[in-house]
Image 1 (cartoon, helix red, strand yellow):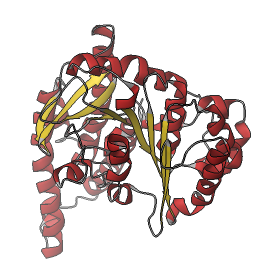
Image 2 (cartoon, helix red, strand yellow):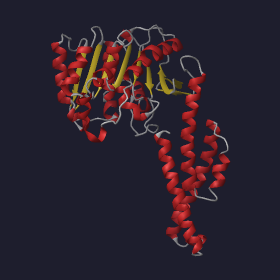
Image 3 (tube, one colour):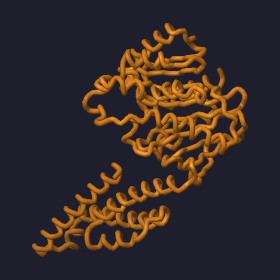
Image 4 (tube, one colour):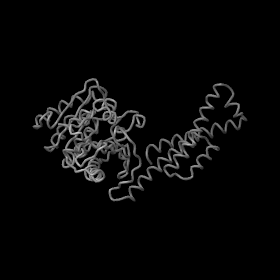
Length: 387
């Protein structure tokens, strides 16, 4: 049971209970439904609102069921005549979520050893092409430039659900502005070779911390999680960062290289992420430096472990990789940026050369969300491509 399905089931249950309860009372009292629906102008507003919603919902159910292979959609529609659209439509959405999850699991188990499925969608975007496919149960978005060469750089991004999509498609109506930055010429490669950019989704959004928090550091130091506060501190955290990072480095990147004819080189392969993703990129490059030569982190969440986290991450870094990290001063970043200075001090003390093999930036007046990151996303990418 995934959380989206559970949410829709709850709404459907409320819709069923309220419909039957008030319908029963109305019938026992002999009330006139037609007169109540169209008795005055206010009633017309409510009646038209409900009817038009139903007229939109029913075709959507038919079209969507056909698209994803759900059967017997007519049963949902017929049940609407004896219950309520407030029950039927969210019930359909809940069953749709379960069907999609089941289909993804089935596809993963029946495809080749890499779990790579057929391409699900393609479209032109920012002078290149955006392709969606499934890999080990995850959706993968890949933006490819018009020209691809064996030495085309490869950029892997965490939190793919709001990375390459248009703002109208993302869950919070914000994105990183990557296509906009490419289309406007803000992302530039001196050799003319723009990177392939890959957005990696999660199978389960509730597992974000499990996959992005630095596992080897936190597992031995669970007291660090107290820094999160009672509201956001996860319960029964099952660490998955090592498996996640190894999936990226050992299976996804080789699959992408095979698919697009790339000759892999860590100097041309990087990770990018924000907040927890800003820590994950550093952890990922430290864990698999033979694959990822550069880590690009925005608004890195140093507050997760304070100085202890800074020290252990810096100590884990192998020589030869490059690190970019930045931070703002507003919203959540207000509690992050002081630790950014401590990270600089620790890196300098460890012998890293600022602006050469590591770079830090402070963006006063900016905060902790995609709209801020999108305003500066070209800076880490251009540093990686051109320095």
